[in-house]
Structure formats: C-alpha cells, structure tokens
Image (tube, rainbow, N blue to C red; front, side, top):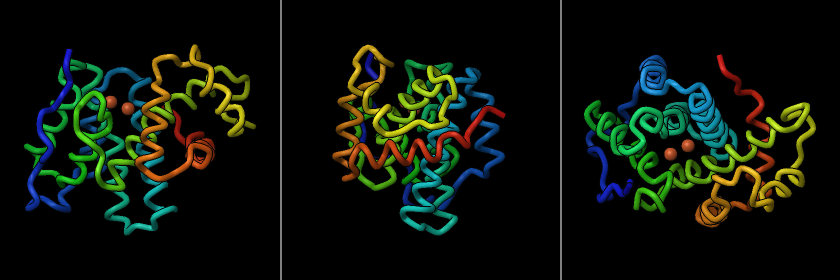
Length: 201
Ligand SMILES: [Fe+2]
Ligand SMILES: [Fe+2]
C-alpha cells in the first residue's frame, strides 16, 4: 500500500488565512475519527503545536490557531480510510479552501510515507511532535502515576529500548529533530510539560 501523495503543492495561495473554526474542526474530527485513542492523539499533537507556536515562537493568535488546526486534523482520515491517509483530508481541506500552509503541514507529517518534505517551521514541528508524543503517551500508560514525576531520562531509556512502542520509528523522530534544529531532550521536556493537560473529554 503506497501512501505517496505524488505532488508538492497544496491548496491555493488566495486562500491564505482561511481556516476552519474550532467548532468546524471538532465536528470534522468527531465524525471522521471514531477511535477515541486516535482522537486523543490528535488533541495531544494539536496542544503541542499550539503551545509551541504561542510560547516558543510568540506568534499572533491567528497564526497559533493554524498550528493547532494542523495538529488537530493531521490524522483525520487514518481511522476510517487508512489507505487514503492523508490524501482524503488534503482533498477535504482544499475543497473547503483552507490556507495552503496548513494543508502542506499535514501533507508532510510523514515524509517517508507521503513523499512530501517538511519545509516550513510548522511542517517540521508537526513531524517532530507526531511520533514522539505517541511514544511518551505510551510510556505514561505503563507508569503507575502516568505523567507525574516523568523525566527526560526515563523517556530516553524507553526511546533506546526498541521493543517498547515498537511501531514508533526512532529514525523518524531523530530525523525530525535534525530538520527542526531542536535537540531531542528539549523536545521531550516540552512534551512532558504540556501533554498531561490533554485528556479525553
Ligand atoms: Fe499520520
Ligand atoms: Fe499522528
């Protein structure tokens, strides 16, 4: 099954700054994603993107929402149409005339799978947060107190342990950090600090 998208240009520049409202995005997420674990993953990545844009980059709220939206919808089609991941959500957002920057970020969140390289800072951070937040969440589930007292060292131990969360590609995480120009420890510490706030509603 090839998920290669086969193109590099998404959306239309005339749609810059067009976004979904939070209600529209949540409606799409809830109707397309039936698996609560995947819903949680998307909320977690959205929260990390939001916090990074806000705290580290101090972007304008309008820009912050674009970052959050990319996180919120990046896996929208994975649950029901895995063979169309992430072509279906790209089509949907193009039809709804959404800002091309958001669509490009979604299209490049797995370069090895989709064949689209992360270019912008938003692209690179979505790629960097995606798999690593999943690994850290898996670690929280096996700890008696979840995220409480979790430290970078413990996460790195799990990171090096290939049998732990074996489906999480360490190579992709390492590549994403290099692309984003951020070291792994910094990223882990950020996720440990921000992720506990996100729980299933
Ligand atoms: Fe994905
Ligand atoms: Fe994901």
